[in-house]
Image (cartoon, rainbow, N blue to C red; front, top):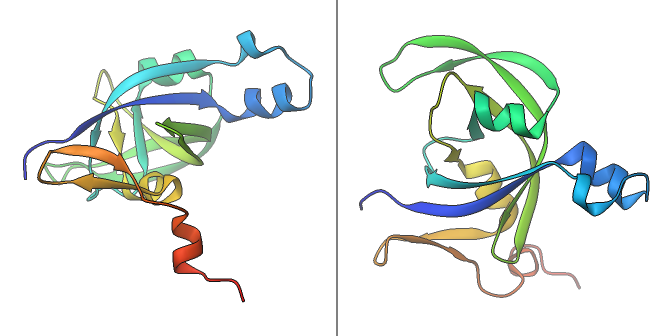
Length: 139
């Protein structure tokens, strides 16, 4: 399977909360559109410093991560951030990678949105129907 990219939208979760509470208008919610590499081997959403600067997400904690070359670095974990793809959305935390690294869409936000990788067509797709109902049937 080759590289899969998806157009996603990232929104500042704190701004969204204030907007839903009618404290700030829609146009003031900080948001960024990004072409993200879909990486199911990464578990979190990873954004770069510039994206985080636009979103203005607060640091929750520092966390050591292993880069592709096995280098261990401490990164900021920020959030909350809402990730949107198609009609799906999920609220999650994100790690901030140094410099202009590309945005990575990891397994946790993918699972939260109920999206799947279509390997044949090399694209991200929305799951079919209400996947939560299929996993956790109510009686």
